[in-house]
Length: 335
Image 1 (cartoon, rainbow, N blue to C red):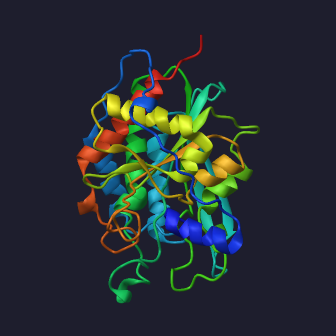
Image 2 (cartoon, one colour):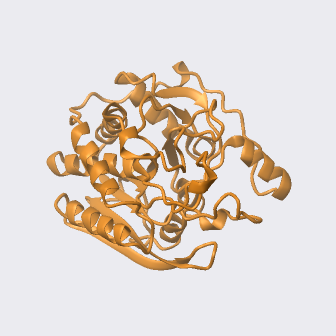
Image 3 (cartoon, rainbow, N blue to C red):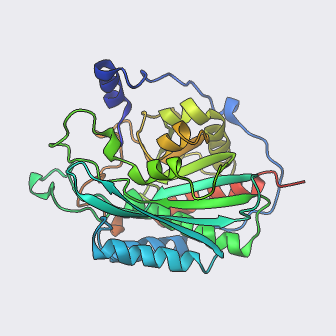
């Protein structure tokens, strides 16, 4: 589930389960990270854009639907052209309404033999309910999820393509988590419903694809395709992985994307990075579009029928993808 800091504070007062947001005052100067100069591949935004379109064209990727199955087949078959190490983790979980949901976590690896590796991830399912749409008649309609889901996957599909063409000095895992967005509609939430969000990542965190799986750190992408996106320093990320936030933000600012990677506090968000941090103890950040001036704290079409492909901007995909490639290829390799 995704909360802004205001929701987290309210929940903490009621249940004691979350801490009040910590003011992580971070200046741009304090966060500059020096890395060796290396050749960085050029991220192809057109390729990522096409991947987003392909996903959206299947229709809403809601678990237990044909669109969901078709998208899984596309992701798996395409990743297999980029690496021979593709694992599909299948299982079942229960939704808030006791529906059995069949899920597939899709995992692609490069240099699986080394523990000198990083984890990149995004969720590939889409929301079954447009429960934040301004029109209540749309609250039970599924969401296309062009930005909320498909954008992060599209960026990572292009990263995967680049990893085939350019061998990094470290090991990489890309995981597409399923059943992230099947939490209860806002008008049906009763008690603590947090368990029903991010179930694919929680399952993986408890049952990793490799025994004793380890990564130095992780980067989660969520809603990374809208025009003029702003990436704030999300609270859970700062709590568990502040150094990684600074590393990514420094890279983004160094290569010219200071208007996107802002040195400003964001809310505490319950997302797929939470179980990775808490269960697997891998310091993982959430690179997510946050807007402190919006009513929800997210981009304007979050969980509405308006989260459609026309909202996707190639420039933003380029920003995120090029920053990721910079982080990956500047990471010290094995000596």
